[in-house]
Image 1: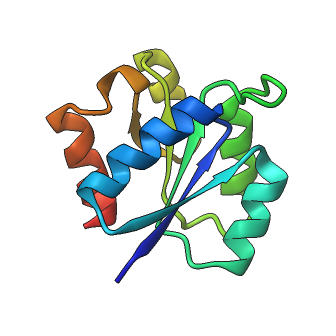
Image 2: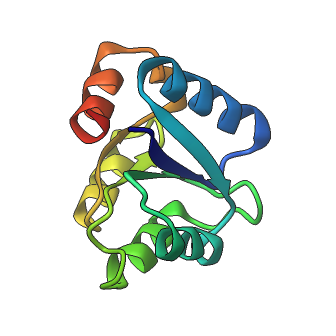
Length: 123
């Protein structure tokens, strides 16, 4: 069964790279959002298996950690797994502290570690 992944805050080229990587390895549909508001709307109206959030949103440079805080504070959607997209361990640590699971960076899209992290969520 096809699962839905929401990718929040990445520019077009980065969204396409993440989408292609996910579709090559998993049976998923990838939906692009641009901030907390439209991500919440998708989460409330669709069954979503995973949300990936860029460290700095392309639209307005909002901190992705703030998006994670908003998602995790909403009891209706707080159980949906969220990963931060960043190459920096200190930001991954901050995301985990906010309730996310450890994500991946754009430079590590094709590594076995990234695949294993995604497989744990997407099967």
